[in-house]
Length: 292
Image (tube, rainbow, N blue to C red; front, top):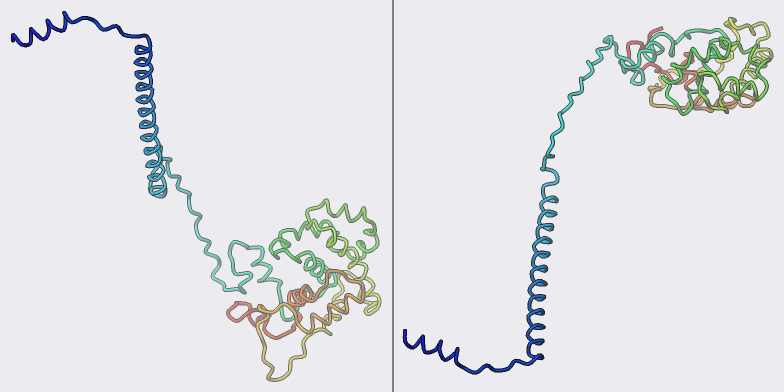
């Protein structure tokens, strides 16, 4: 206790040493520098900690992208399933076997490829020719859904009326305003084909030029039936797109001025009309196979 009191007394009684202004300034500068360094270190530490957190968050996001659930879960909406289409139990050629297309199925069942021909009239065969040309690049179902629009626009496929009254670009434009396939070249071709159709009938079947005559264009098509040889192998036509008969008829029609009558189009036309080209038309398993 005595020693501690003596040290205190000595300190109090010791003479004061004068402190220079430079010393004070130096001390202030050192203190400021130390404080600045400390603040800088603190900021760097905080920034490092923040960067580490952000990096960790990014890594976590990448790892859990597919497993994380949103904070607000959306209510799952259950879409009511459509009842399956049962159909009528009939097996058809593959292109017409979907019950979602009843118009296509009806055409397959009632019109397409009757061995003896569904309809021999000039009007019907002209209609098929125009529709097959319009179908190029489209589905047959699309054309069938526009069939009534075609019948209205083409005056029930009166080729005489079309050939004599639809002769100008304005007529072409008028047809394009209807609900038919809006393709300018196809419409123009239909007008040209009406005239060529009339000329063919007048040249080859002058007494069978009427709309409902059955021995005009139908008889013309008989020359393009395949002459089946005994023992000849018959292939399913569903897998073919042309034949020797369609090649020949296509070339003949082109010489007569017809348009949109390539071999593929004409092959489909002959099939639809019921002109036998290469044996089997309705495929094996189709309920129409070998039926009239």
